[in-house]
Image 1 (tube, rainbow, N blue to C red):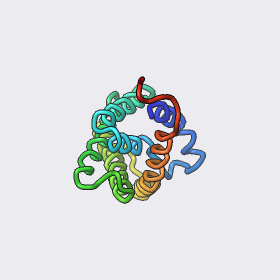
Image 2 (cartoon, one colour; image 1 turned 90 degrees about the vertical axis):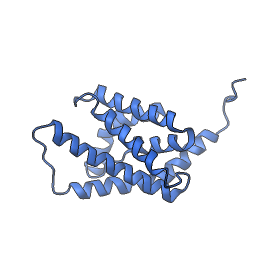
Image 3 (cartoon, rainbow, N blue to C red; image 1 turned 30 degrees about the horizontal axis):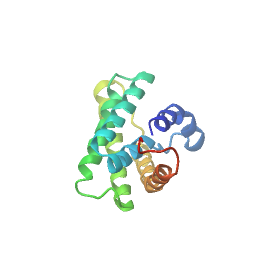
Image 4 (cartoon, one colour; image 1 turned 90 degrees about the horizontal axis):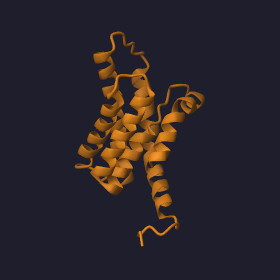
Length: 161
């Protein structure tokens, strides 16, 4: 999961520009955070959110801690939402991932307005957020199934014996 997240983070800009021309922001990291929260609990998912945010902070030119805080907020939003919805059901996965992406986008704009003096928000921003929420949320159950399939593949002895 860590390696997939790192590769996706490094390739995201090039891939998204070629596919969606900055209109659809697919958030693979939010889906992985939700998956880890469901399958491995709070410790693994919070560590992943922190690590991915820190990695983005290191490779980007933004304020330090900016991405880390945003992805920890995604984790906190998913954790809070999972108290009311069961993340093992596809409908709940769609709903909670959509809410987490919405929270991420709102925090991103809020923090940019707080720390950057000149932030220009386009009129199409709500449509872009809706597109990002839709694409990411509808992908969540598919990726959950794919991750479960990968974890169930026979391979090396996982018992440690």
